[in-house]
Length: 280
Image 1: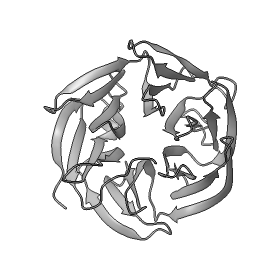
Image 2: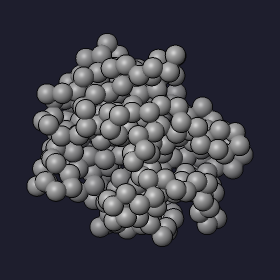
Image 3: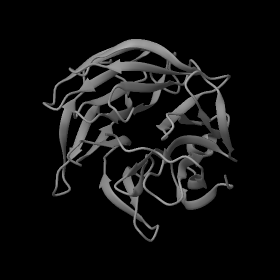
Image 4: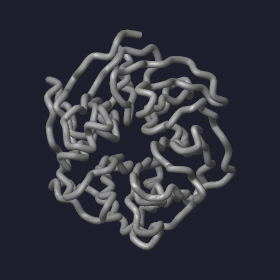
């Protein structure tokens, strides 16, 4: 494993790192942009959201989903590039912003809400909502302590959720109707604040950690396999798949500077040994 290298800098607040269609994507919250790197490694803005594009994923047919978090709407990008409402999430989790998304191969999109007014509000448990392919949405889990990054296993059987305020990864079985059952601790994480996550081909999870300024690879049960140290907080990470050299992409920034509007965000890349996996 090599040292992280800088692919892009001068980012306001990079989040929701994703690997899709052979390229790396992310959201710049401060600029309101959804960005993909082209074949030359240059950033291309593919969508712009008023407010903040909190997180992205894709439907099975390839259409992009974007959370307009403060507006509590899940948006869908049509072939002409326009953004339309895929699901209205208002009234399902209080007046708070939605945070992260993970879509499965059935077209269900899991979206979480942290459940309080971050960063100044009193912490309270959050919820997970599912938006089904017909555009309806309903809560499917509650009592989640600052739900953050989420990922669906390649077989569409399990949803893994980072609970930032509980220092753990939590798993649910995914039912045929999109419901979540059999809640369990997937990994206890010692003094961690897991943020964005991704799953690799061996079934381990990489999680980004802002206050601890690193990304960590853990196996189910919590055994630490690898750690990538950084000089700033790690907000999200994604693994390449189908490439000669497996790569972990990381969005990182100085969190205290982000709050003042400074452009400390970077997209980093580090070579790893185990690639990500495409969903079956």
